[in-house]
Image 1 (cartoon, rainbow, N blue to C red):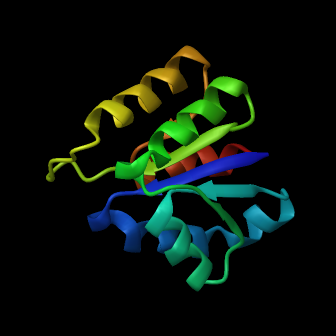
Image 2 (image 1 turned 30 degrees about the horizontal axis):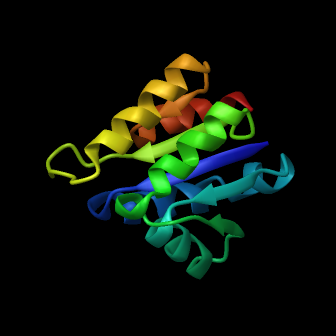
Length: 120
């Protein structure tokens, strides 16, 4: 099962803490993680195996959206920062829309991500 991880700058620490809290489930279920630029780098530094894509503003969100559309990405964990403006908002909107179109579970905060991880 492929799960995408994305976190805006103000949420990257929460994403890494979330992954660390759920590392046993990720290992047991043989989850393949993919992620955008810096989020992937931070996850790797924490000891996780992550396929790194481009940074979000440089097309990483669009790359994940493509994998959602192709059917290879089964879940998206996207810890968004609602207090900041993001220049790549069109790519973010496209990713969220494609998750809806293709019925792919999407968590935009740790509470929802917790429910999704417990479901696998």
